[in-house]
Image 1 (tube, one colour):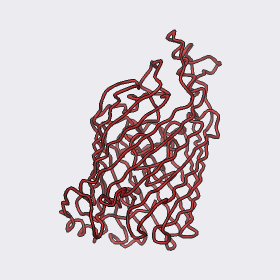
Image 2: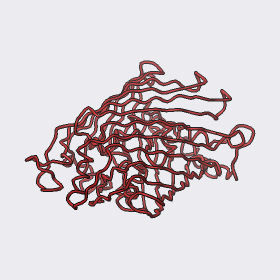
Image 3: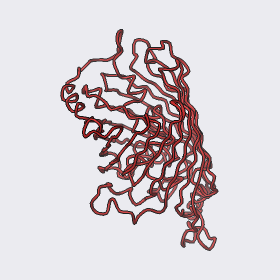
Image 4: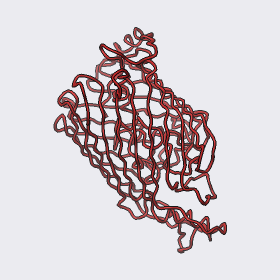
Length: 454
């Protein structure tokens, strides 16, 4: 979410200098004077609101519909303007979620990696970020530290914000709880990131954060032990190097990166206890394993751009993650997709996307589900591989306001859902449908935005 206000999706909702916009109406810039006054003092308001109606009419574990709401809001304070500290920015933001289900929404399909935008626990307000950001040496060195999540800095892409059902701000399951204890948006812990830019098109970054799964049900506020350091299970350390080209220097910009992560936490075996017995059948204390590591890569490239100075384009992207630890939840992950900004000349502010993801799970994870079947006297099993496809189209209603209907189809849901103790046999697919109302605060109200490099 850190790159939200500089994302292609946000850019595509800005009115074109001339010609059709496709908007149903234009509300103007009602808060522009207030926003500019604040910006003159270095204070930039940021935020969004989204309503998501999501249902599973066929397949899955539950054929029902959920209305889920989220509001993100905060400030970026340019400390150079505010108090005269060059290159320094203070970030603070909160995230409120309500409606939906307390445990999240992925238990409707039975797919543990599905519908990440609505992952629980929900119905809570959290302190998402409280951090200091410093840029030095003509922006060749950057560091940030405080209460934040490294999911905002590593394995990210603005294109991912186009999708609802699977990937969100960063590649999954890199910073997802599946393969580490590192928190994901909007949960924050003590963390820091250092980035070096040897040239404008190349970078290397390294980070470290407390792996603290105890933060999931909490709000992350400084009171009631929310900023304590007794709960973490270890340290999460990612490294990434990348090459990126920009629209101003080439007609077809792209972004390519590779990365590595390691979590020093101990992880419980999903299937076996300390004596080698199966947990679902005989119980006992889970066998523990030391640390988890993995590698990833991402590539995204502009494939079509009819006007070098325009906002209409089509991007393609691919990515993959491979566990280096034999006990990681997800052993391998692949993604591929297309995102179009302005797919039609008469609607240059619309956007559309198609996404395919493939997961290969640890046999011990799927084996633990099979063991629960056995414990119930059922001869059944779940697949080690799951696939998800999403197609969506975002209609630009007005500057900063859009509505996005979407459909997703999951093949072979893994049923590794923490709040579903008893799996169901014969769940071979799940069809999900819904719509997302999205209001991006700054363009909707005419507020100036602070451009935050990721």
